[in-house]
Image 1 (tube, rainbow, N blue to C red):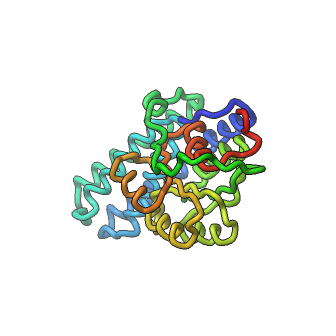
Image 2: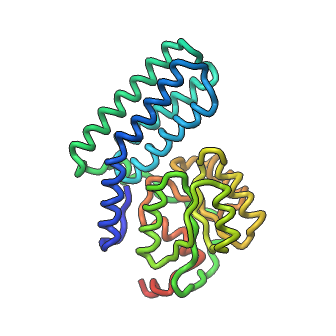
Image 3: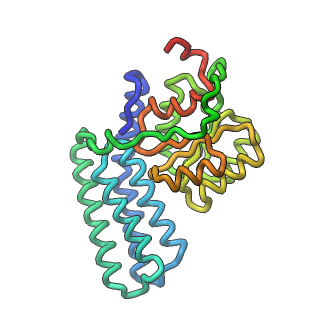
Length: 273
């Protein structure tokens, strides 16, 4: 769940949570449409990937907002697609039945949340690991920047970008730009010359680790911090090897996101904080 400073930023985060809840019918309709396509036609990589993205984004944002009951069902959808992707064919009744069950449960959980927007945050989300400290180069004294370091946020989910932007701006950091894919991320790095990039590890059409390697190759001075809904040691090790200096795990809280950045750069306004 997101926890941050109780200020105007808190009300902004409440608004973002409300926007996510309001978007649930549209997200569910997209999942159901893609599922119908999978039921009627041979399994196509593009369709599977599109549905996987819907589940992935639902999982990530729901868990960040403390709506673990929705996130857990989305995880089931991801696992189902991963298990059946190679063997699912037209008429595969097991796959069809299990996918329908996941969507039905997702619809029920979404309706419950929409009927009760003040739904209590899931305690599992609150206790989940929030960040993984990484590269020891972070032990250097952080650089103080007037106005804060310039940061680019890269995530295909617009609500997740908005959440991170709110947390960063509330802390005095400068968000120099946002990108929804790897190509746009590289363009922003060229145009804005940011100090830090917060990079989602899973994006449609481009693996975050590949984008990380491109940024490190073209812009070696930029510090890249990966953001992921998974905190497995394999993911962390891969990120370290590719040149990441930090790894933030969803669900996260404001303190841990800022800690990852302020290992290197500290906004002048936060001195003595």
